[in-house]
Amino acid sequence: MDIRNSRQVEKFAQIRPRYVAFSDSLRGLLESLVIAHDMKYHVVEARAKTVDSFSDKINRPSKSYSDPLSQIEDLCGSRIICYFVDDLEKIVSIIKNEFQVISEETAHQQEKLNVDQFGYLSYHLIIKLNEIRNNLIEWREFKDFRAEIQIRTVVQHAWSAVSHTVQYKREMDIPSPFRRRLHRIAGLFELADEEFVAIRNQRKSLKESAISNIADGNTDIPINADSVSALLATWKGIPDLVSSASNAGFIIDDDVYDDDANYVGTISNFANKIGMRSIEDLESALSNIDQAYLDQLCSESRGEWYSSPEFIALLILIYSSDGKITKSDLVQNGFEDGIAARVIRVASSVRADAKENSKRSPDKD
Image 1 (cartoon, rainbow, N blue to C red):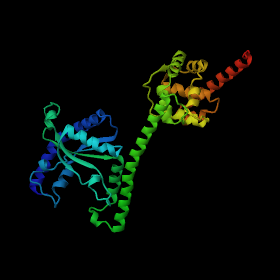
Image 2 (cartoon, one colour):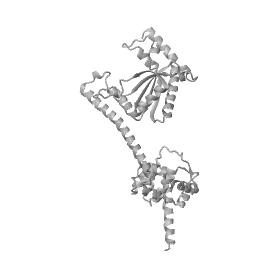
Image 3 (cartoon, one colour):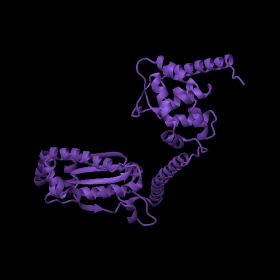
Image 4 (cartoon, rainbow, N blue to C red):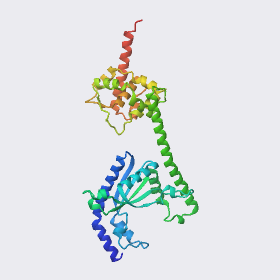
């Protein structure tokens, strides 16, 4: 390393903490911007270049920098990894609206590849803060800082991570048969991105169709997670179900959250398991609210039992299944062993009492 480069490395080491602070602020800002536009993402990350990486870059024989601190544009690097390929341009548009874009690398964009080419896809932007943020006190110290932002999908990120471990430095160095295999794999990754978008759109269409059918009174539709979700969102019996649960002592909270819970999916799976044919069958079962069952469940609970309307609907379905849903089924779907045992036992006991009372008091003609 020559003396001039050595001094540049020392200088970068001194100012690097400012780039660390910039990268932290930038990551938080990018996360906020994506969330504000109601977009889901896998990860947003940012980092300042390490001193060793900076030193390696300026000392490469093929590189020559007169002022590396101003010429190297990725002293701060950020990456936004999203789920769907059609979100990429939306995120790029957000960045262009919120930052000053100095340059944009287009070589890794799909439309820049020949029809017979496949490979690494990503958006690369070099940005600075725009004038609005330059004037904000919390951003003022980063006024002249630049950063590289890469935007890609989870699938593209996986391809990049894996392919870089097996590829040669230059594509022309790859033996022809090996190159062909890599291109075939890259094509599959590209197809996967397109299929994920198609699946997302199809699910959205199915959900909208279920909501429309149920709103029109047509409940003779298949049971799945989307149709169950649509039913519970629009069903006129929900207030009665919630009222019965509240009277029993349940504390109903729509915001009750459990990382392992998917009550709508569990209702769908259980309804299909016990042979229900349509949402109409499920609606009929959920209308069969036995107050004694909810009362006893709550009276035997230890402490307050916070619940959601979806969970109460699941409890009613378990009761209505007439024993076809077992403790093992509940445990496999995330119930604690003790709660699963109690729910099944109480359901069985109350059903037996109801049948016995029906025998003692037959309907009169």
